Each structure stands twice: as structure tokens, then as C-alpha cells.
Image (cartoon, rainbow, N blue to C red; front, top):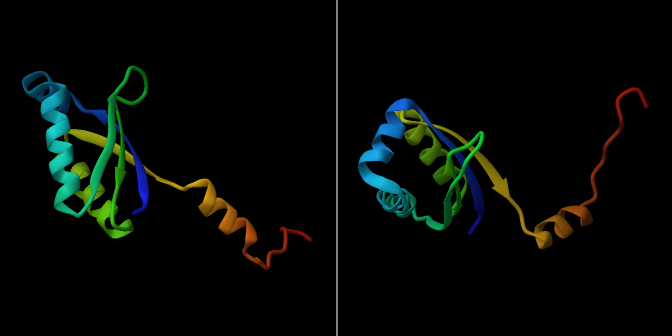
Length: 106
């Protein structure tokens, strides 16, 4: 299953929700969310800095990941970015692909 890194920042309302539910409550909510689209949370971390939460999830496909992103963003409690993660083996496979490309101006 493809892996994704979700980087989230809470809005003021989202932070209020974390204060009420705690970190484990939010983890349970994120686990239910991932499971609802056939995914699974591998790891979830709260953090200091630009982002408040980092989550590594397995999702069935990009459609499931997009559905999560749309619903989380629509909630208004979280600003979210999703990064597609690739294994070293997937990069090996990409490196073996023949690609026809011409540099600009060449």
C-alpha cells in the first residue's frame, strides 16, 4: 500500500479540540479516519515548529488520500499537506525507466 506523510497545523479551533480530547483522542480519531478509507496509521507524532502533527499512513491509493485531505481541510480545524512517500526500490524502478526529455533551450 502506498505511504503518505501528512503534515498538519491546527487552527485555533483545532487546538481547542486537542486541549479537550488530548493527544491520544486525536490519534484515535486519525486512526478511524484512515481505516474508513481502507488505510492504516503507521506512526503519529506531535511536534514543535511549523507543523503540529506528522502522520505516516498507508492508504490504498491517491483517491483515498485525496478524500482524507478534502475532508480534513473542509473541517476548518486543521491545515494539512500530504507528501507521497516512495521506497528506495520504487526509486530504483524509476531510475531504470527510459524517459525522452529535452532540456529547455537545448
